[in-house]
Image 1 (tube, rainbow, N blue to C red):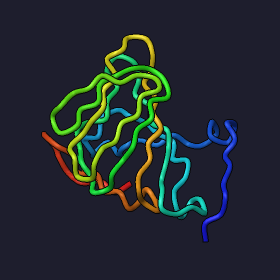
Image 2: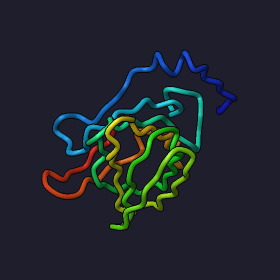
Image 3: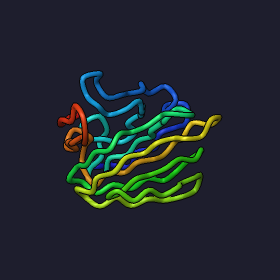
Length: 141
């Protein structure tokens, strides 16, 4: 059963950073999963913080059946959804429909791009990434 959860900034900083396996063409993005069943007693939503390094960090184009929301915490970059690129920066919100091909890149030379992501899923393990292009494949994280 779900119950309220509060994560302190210190607890979040101490969480391990995750990344795609080297065999997956996911890009050089890293993330910390904040709320995700079964790791946390939460349901219906999965959330975390993702990071793309300055000048060249990216989450390569992919899709998954779950809709997703991004809230840009810091930095600026470009989000591509269904082939349309949009500049994003701190404070922007992005809604990505389920099965929409999308990706993110950081073209900024000095600041990393950080965003909060939210999936309509009980746990991150439910989200199956299907990557586009060369070396494309599926990844369940």
